Image 1 (spheres, rainbow, N blue to C red):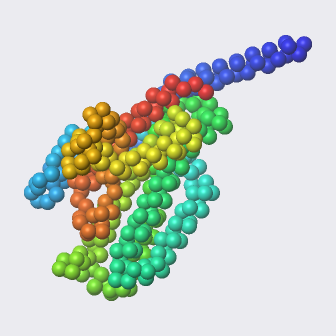
Image 2 (cartoon, rainbow, N blue to C red):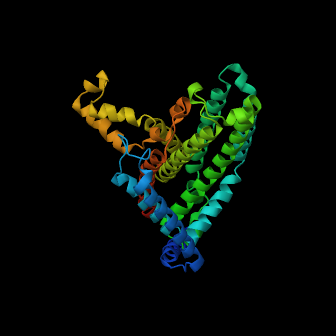
Length: 374
């Protein structure tokens, strides 16, 4: 009797799992009507992307009114617009619901609330520490706050990215989600966009507090007229230049966050939680050295180690250079220190390369997730 009961329980469990699997597949195959208002929104976003593409290909690709050495338009620059358009049209109402749910779940995490709250307080109080370097208060405030924001938001992107999908699988809520008219591409894209929205809100709040603190500090120290004055002889480009340059730097940093968010999300689908965390941090630091890998892989430049490196090692470095995200292009803190303007063409070229990398990561994540059985 016990044996037959045991067999019956197992058979019912198998039948239940099979039914769940069939429900998931049938739900993914069902079509969902997309409201006309949603399509209008997609058209508007697409027109904005095309407007930016037209501006870049006419004037935006140049550093100044005329091209200078180094200005160019490449295929990679155009592929970024293609990826943006693809994401726009793949974002269905279902993706929007998943993204909204992911955002709500993320902002309710206690550790994220504590980290964000503590960061905002430290940024607001950062003017208390600038006295440790007399004569360089402005540079210290700018460098400290910029580096702090970059570090904190990068931690958020990695830790949130690796914790989005595994809990859904452990709690078996994935069965409920995929039993609806939701395919796996919509699920992955929704999770990614929800994570990007969370990171954007956190970054935006930190940047606002930093800008308010920075502007008030400069006005209090120099007066409004002195803070806004432009005096290139004394290397004082003015508050307007500083704010615009810092805005470009944070836009670039958000591009770096999207890459790491996609990377952490994909790693969490392939390996364990701890391995995904370690892998994301290793790739982040290796990506910050991508220019170094390029020099080592080609053997060019003044580096004697690169010139004397064996061909096999150079080949391995060359492959690493092309596989790793070029995250060093998103870090312009050197330009901020030297007060070198960060132009639109540099911002878009970096963003475009990052978008292509994100598109490749999401495609890999979808292929891995689509073949996975739960």
